[in-house]
Image (tube, rainbow, N blue to C red; front, side, top):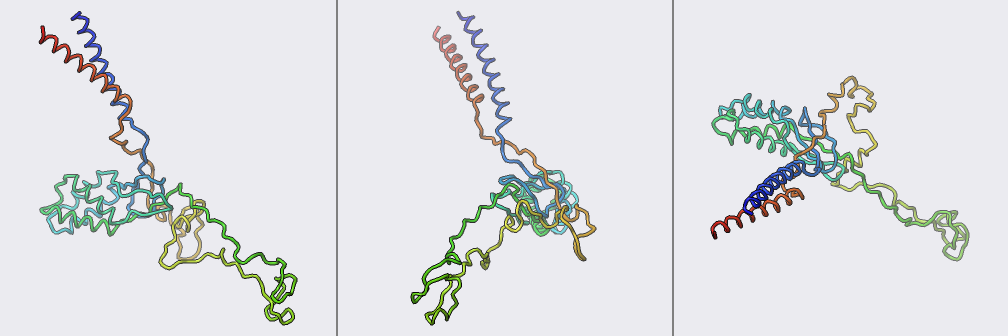
Length: 294
């Protein structure tokens, strides 16, 4: 009986280990999450992604700014060391594509993200006063960077049809004073001295501008339109961008990368592994109690 129980316990232990490994493999795969749009060679310009996507820059795009900021800190910092250190970080998160036509990753946000990445790098190039050097780097990057974030899958809401407040022109009716006929043919001061009238003009369809209200990029540049600086747009006239390559007109190239999955996802394989492990533990405790009793 004891030999049979030992064999059973060994089998359950192996099963628990296998279930634990399987659950870990499933958890590492995780569920699909938002992608990361990487701006590879610039920290300025416009970036187009899907709503909710994270936006990251390559550290190499701010290497020169970091080097200058460290050298100008006055803390005996070695700017080239700091620049080389930040260039090794190829994905620095600076913002997120909004759930609207567009938004921005400001220079201040980019400077703060670069500061954090440089502080975590542990480089020896920050000089005697790390905080002062990091402040100088953050300020320099903030002044030299700034991204416009555009949502490729944003759809502008449709404008509801406004009712015709002035009525329909050309309709017939009775004029003031009892005159009848087509109201659109009446002119003021006529119709036998009784005075004429005409339908009010409908100005509800004329667009108006409100002071202090900015127009969203999605309204100025619809999804099927052409953004300024587009390489496919015709360039003409003196003083325009004729003769310049697409790499000059359009700063930045973006591509989507899969981001890390959420670390708090608990799936069925892990639950099964925990249950099996609990059963094995209970069996071991029972065996220990029986041995103590005998």
